[in-house]
Length: 174
Image (tube, rainbow, N blue to C red; front, side):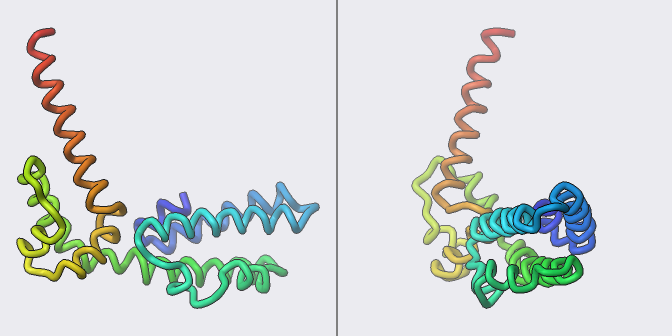
């Protein structure tokens, strides 16, 4: 829930779910600070993985050693909540709000790929088609689609092949 809310750039929901998470682990681990810290560190690790899948570097967003920063602020529950609040705000602002400015390209890119998936297409060709530089498109493609161009194109080709297979097989079984 926390990660899905982060992806939607909904800070209020993120904090609501995070507070639920804190209560859950606080009561579950009230006798051991180490277990409590481990749960929080696992959450940080999961968020880092998600952020890196968007093509961002977590150190560029947080500006320091994230685990050390957390551990230095994890003595009191209020400090933990404030630390995560700032962490989430940074991620939303630098990763998921950033996505909005690239969305104008998403439809153009998707349309072009869906219309030309059977051809030999590349990022260079798409960049030329939408009037941006290849290096800029390469940089933002992962931020927009959450995967590489090759992976995205292959997924579309597989999807279209499945549709074709269903259309060929279905009439014989109907």
